[in-house]
Length: 273
Image (cartoon, rainbow, N blue to C red):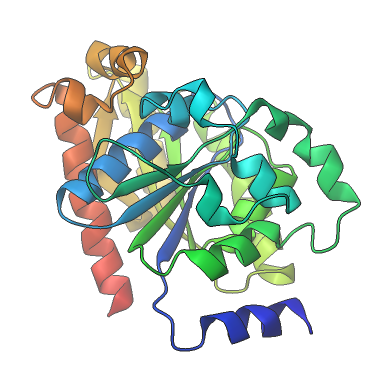
């Protein structure tokens, strides 16, 4: 049976979550921070959310307070077929929010996947079988456009792109947009950019404002109104194993992610039509 036929047969009469990959091949742009806090804000308004940590660094897992000893079965085992997805899912302290953690073995998955059957569709197949209880699945992608990110983009319905307000921002995103177009053409024709969120915005820095204006001029309404500011509380929160929304709800970073979640959900509502 072909992959698309298998997936279709698994999904008949099942409720589907909305799968959103959070991706940018550049590191340090706020992907993981966005995944953690967007998921938390969604759960706060009673959405059931699953975060899939697909980054070998495992920062999303750490940011939710998951101990290393609780990651013995993780996204690596799911991808290579050693374990079904439900055995890797861990509940967080946040009601309605679960995580598939990352593990150090995931760093070798790029090589292992090369010779596997359905190497591009393994995450899609795993999510198709076992995520019908969730409203949203957010995939935290690694800072690279390799097989892990490809698996995420092929599994996803949409991509949310965190974009740091720095000089080379537009140059970097062009590579991601080209990759998305190639994946649409060859693997996932319905994949779309759900939105671009400007991160690490410093209102005291003229460059941040100039980059934001350039990005909005180029991409238009696809860029969210909300910008995520540079904020020390956002940086501190992961060391306490908490999203910033729990660490300091009133700080500027937490409030920005609350506003971003509202924008994302409104956009999702319009898409669902």
